[in-house]
Amino acid sequence: MILVDESRCSGCLICAEECPTGAIQVANRLAVVGEGCSHCQLCIKLCPKGALRIKQDATEARAKCTACPVECEILEGYWGACQRYKNLNGRLILRSPLVVPEQAGPRHQTVLDPLITGIGAGTTSPCYEPAPYVVEEKRGDVDVVTVVSEVPLSYSGIKVKIDTNLTIGEEGSVVRRQGRAIGRVTTEEYGSKMLSLGGVNVVHGKGGSTAIRTIVDLINRGEVELRVENGPSLKLRVGERPIIDGKVSDKMRVGCGSAAAAMFAPYFKEVADEVIVLDPGITGLFSEHQAGRSIGMVWSGITPLGIKSTIGRYFGHSGGGLGGTNVRTARDAVASIDMRVARPGMTVLITDTAGETGTMFRVTADGDLEEIPLTPEAQKVVGLIQENCEESRVSAIYMAGVGGSARSGVTKFPIKLTRAVHAGLVRLTVAGSPVFVLPGGGITFGIDVERIPVGAVTWVPTPATVAPIEYTMPREVYEQIEGHLEKIRSRQEVLREREIRWLKDH
Image (cartoon, rainbow, N blue to C red; front, side, top):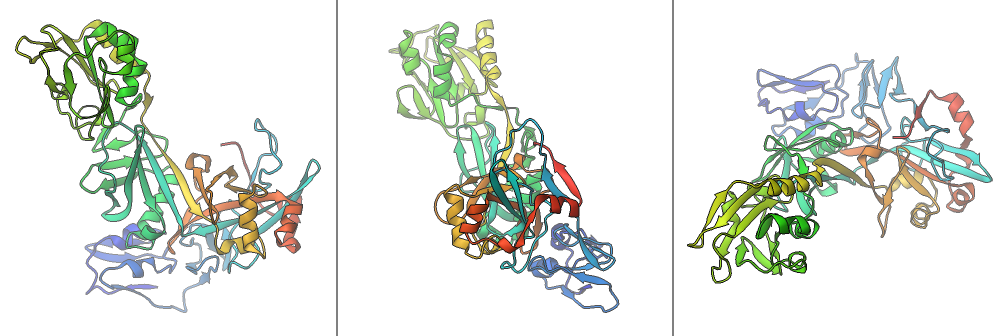
């Protein structure tokens, strides 16, 4: 059992928030450990006050799990920290049936599609033991082998793509969950903001278990609440619109301001003498832009806010203003008006790359701007920009390295597996779906999390994610890489032996 030193416990909630089994509650500023505790000892490692310790109790009917280095001690009727193994009458059983891809269906099967998936396969430990299943079946004229396991991956992270015009903070800013650092804001990729969460250096830090839990929550389509340092709060769920500082982001920009000037040039020419398309990356000035000049526009004498890059293109700045820029009002979008070129009565339309802003002005005799009603033609072109925008959305790529000791479960000569994967002789999949293998050393992959069935990825307090990994290859390749040939079993034999759940295309 886990004992709580009441004189030290401050009720800080860390143990309750991080407990993978949900066995710890905090009441009256004191941690209370319930029966669901699996003795994973994560709470002991995380407690800043050293208020928790383990005490063995011979009267407790616990089963020790050796599927990973955590070595949970699980009470009768309860699950381990990874939520995969349960103590049932003193015997550990797997939560999930073995998941097998459908044989028939709309998707044409290729030779190197996995025969079974790693979902429900379990784990062998230590790593030199052969993987739980080495399965063979003939496909056409080819004898195919699939090797599967649910593999703990400390070297893992997630790249989160947020399609929005709203600012999410400066590049390099720390991202936190429940106050703990779990990653950073990275680059902006043409209207999408990117977060990098997890990775081994973060995972080995104070917020490591929080980072791993966040990765798994996102993969399993859960909502996570994050805070960017010196930036906004974020509510993110893969496949849905992001909520940034309480505001639901509706639209992803159609392109940068320069791109918008080019795309909608024929329409812009008919609505105003000048059009400024605001953008935090590149603001477009229509009359000076190549697209404007190509259809007869001449520079209006107006200069927008920003740093000039090339003709008609001005570097903008991110912020909480119009179109995700630092421009607070439409009038502020104009830095200067050269009345030696401009003329009184000229009209100016100011919009943004998502069509969320639409304001018209007229140049006055003293070189200022007065706001005028938006004309029907201007309303139409702003609406056209909106119609060409995609909806804001959160998506994510799960990144991990499987180039370590787990290869020994596949082959007696690990480097041969690495080389065969990079040569395309062995196909790596996660939960039955193909991955992109990054070039260079090791086996580092990325996969769209929406290709992974909900619940297929879990975590352990190492901390590490646990992912269903499959390696599929012709038998002759398995022989060449010195695989565990003595462990090969027919697919039909495995199907007869295990409870099976069929995996449809997802």
